[in-house]
Image (tube, rainbow, N blue to C red; front, side, top):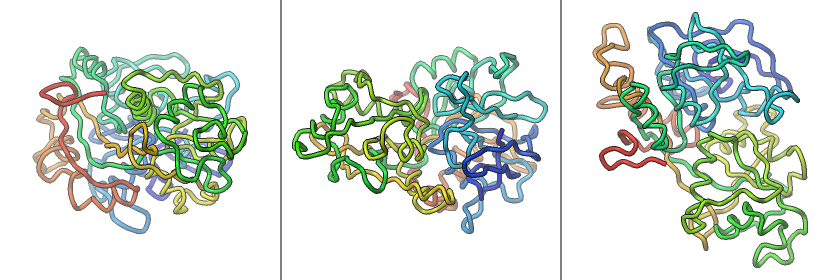
Length: 391
């Protein structure tokens, strides 16, 4: 079990958890958020970004939590600070035993929300289920990290739960494109065009030499990967496939599709079946930059790269410039509860909304850029309301 840790490990908040390459050890001195703190969960893509904003960057810009009475805790989506899937267990779904966390002082461990959807769900679900099946009241989570817009259904569910609905704040953009190992890939060096990408995931194209114009390519079987259900990266990628397929949902009918933890570079460099040379996966540009810069330590020897891409278009090599978000409850936007002693603003208006908010402030632009994203703040509003969109 890993709790928020100081920014040096890529987790967030206060004390460190020991993560040894190749194994994961329980932390011996984790700190739990207290009553005045706020807690976030959700997207794997944004977990390091949130760490940098709230705790600072290694050897660089300071974070919001410095010398603050009440702090922002952002729990990683995975139990491993490098973003890898861990805790292999033959009896668990997909062989991966979900990691647990204590999100609030005095509460019980819960399954760590992994992905944008799970993070947003934790804002309004009436109860959360532990691995042992125990259920207890929610209210543990205050904000969610999301790499795709929340669905209209989720906003409706939040409204029905009495939260006032969801409120979304865009704070940055990044490139989403196909990743391959940095050396030895059989993928075309010039990238894969949108129509061919659809054919790969549908199963109409199974080997590299079946790609149009690539008859001299490898006869090896392509291994297309897709992130876990609920991942914002998966939502964005499936929406792109649908757009590339004339607005029709693309079935993942290729028998070689592998479901993996999003942005886990080891899924590319050490796939469960097949050779790394044949793997492709949608991957966060920010996470590639962190990995290849050495941020994750010795494991960064397993470097990956984006294939060249230009746009989400059938005849163009695939690349999506996507938006990144923080999501809160509308009731918390309107709350009169002051976040910091001596202050005048609630936590939403301190961190995410209105004049001088943290994530939209130029003072924290360097923190966002250090995670490989481009600052681009916009109060997006409530999904599906007043002309705003939802996925």
